[in-house]
Image 1 (tube, rainbow, N blue to C red):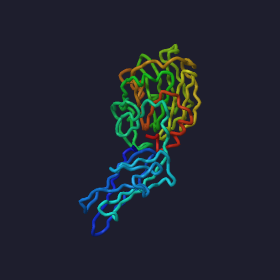
Image 2 (spheres, rainbow, N blue to C red):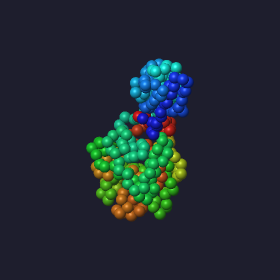
Image 3 (tube, rainbow, N blue to C red):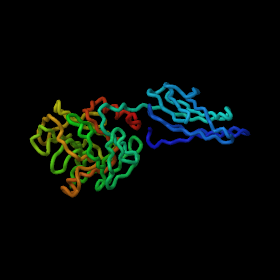
Image 4 (cartoon, helix red, strand yellow):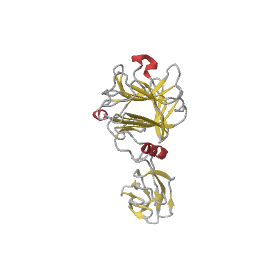
Length: 339
């Protein structure tokens, strides 16, 4: 369902004089649903007949609507993209109300998705069962696809409990999200968007930003000869502070390839630490954080890597997404991924 969308359709069925109230237009993504209400006044018969473009109950082309007023947008954007949903009073067929609904496209959810944290007033997982726990200074504000997370950069993060589905991510992984980071103090040096690791013990797969706008990926697999694993980083300035952008990172141990993308475009990475090649499986760890690296009591403020700024539609996959899949999400813009 489209985030935070609510609407009521009012039919005034006064026998003496016709009064019709038409709602403001609304927009739905393909396959989204919208609950409409059509209260009837002036008659003991409160029932209505629902229509879409004049068709009782609608159809697969323009969308369907149930007897209770639940409208389901079609799977493909119709032509024209705007349809009219109406309710007609059974007590007096001359009394009706209607509202236009515009259907827009969204990005197909790539196969292999494990978790999807949209940031809709909570840390719920839209795709799986890995609901997060809000910690410290995290609020909700409009970001890209309606609301998203706002991290204060000092105490706020999301703690995602360990699970079987997280451990299913063994050889391929992707993380993608919309992000608007605030400036990271040089004294701290970095901020972690996504962290899958056990502090002081082992790394697995993490994505971070340096204070100079470098985008970095840290991973460790069963072939790694170091506890820290390997780091791959872009040139400085790739990530823009104070601007909303789509960031993505992927890794495939079968091919020993790690990739990063900004707004759907591939970013060159350089191996700056540890082995340049890797294989096997990602190191088994039990912590997953969004918005920080670790607790501040482990290695101090700098080691904690708290993220200052906005994150929206954070998603985790057990596959290495292709550039075309990532570009599709970017192109969908405010419509986001299909639900």
